[in-house]
Length: 426
Image 1: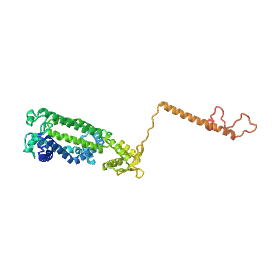
Image 2: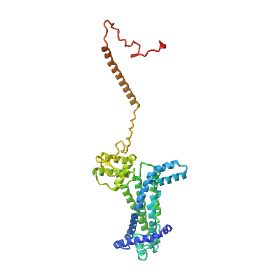
Image 3: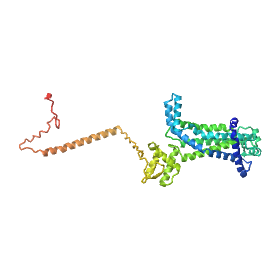
Image 4: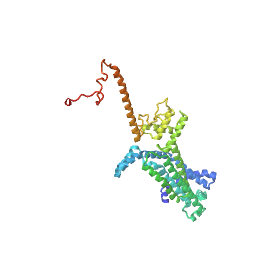
């Protein structure tokens, strides 16, 4: 760890200078030699760094969303070229280039934060060794060595010997209790952050290897932090615990305000947005809300179930989502909505309703009912024709009582008009 930290010694002076400036502020309030002054200086350093990394965090979110969107296409490429790894890699790179996605963008905040992390480790290691480093020398070095956080020196580690801890005016038991609690909190915060991402902000409609990787990292990262944490000074543990808490809060905000399409967070977000727009039709919408509605409208028939439900809910409330993301009353604007059957305004056709499957007895009963109906119609037709024949033709005088119409069929013959016999059969 010391060798890696020495590689980032070029930013040791800027990091130590920032810590000293914050120490002047907090030292005037809590006292220059207190753990609160030095501890809060480290916390303020974290906050300053994370504020500067917000643009990279936004880029990380976009890269992660892009990777999630590309997962189905990536899976197709893997299945198509599963026996040709070189062609598979070429097709993957081609897909990244066409969509403008960079898989490494999701690691940018961690990579950008690493130099500051190792520089702080280098500074705290110099304090523990009573070695001036950067802007911390002389009186500031002595003050930093006296600083204790809950009884543990700022530069003490979990694996330090009793003699080294005693030289920093502390007990080994106290140091190990404080560092163990901080390592556990650091690992739990990392686990909760990853779990929050997996359970709330992942598209559940697409099952891909990406989800399995994230699930694995959810358990691997806390273990890694726990293993390496026993070699971190207390000041570095303060730094890493603070950055984990910041990441967790920042992610909670993003999940609530800009959720991943198809996730549980999106369903909760659209429910809140629909309820607010229904209570206050024509109310002012934030830019982020308009962008989300605009993206939903642009999808057309490609909307997921949650987005379709949102559009239908607006339509039932007399509202319509416009192509610019504004939600207006449907009687004054062109509505872009789905009907209850799932059809969209972009020319989609309603879903075909499948007939219910009938049992064998039901089919037989239905066939028998049709036969009875056909037989009753035939009998009614025949009974209606007989009176017409008897009234239309009058019997001649002197006719024999049993003499009937010539058109009547003889017994044993078919009723109705007979086809003439073939000449060969006469």
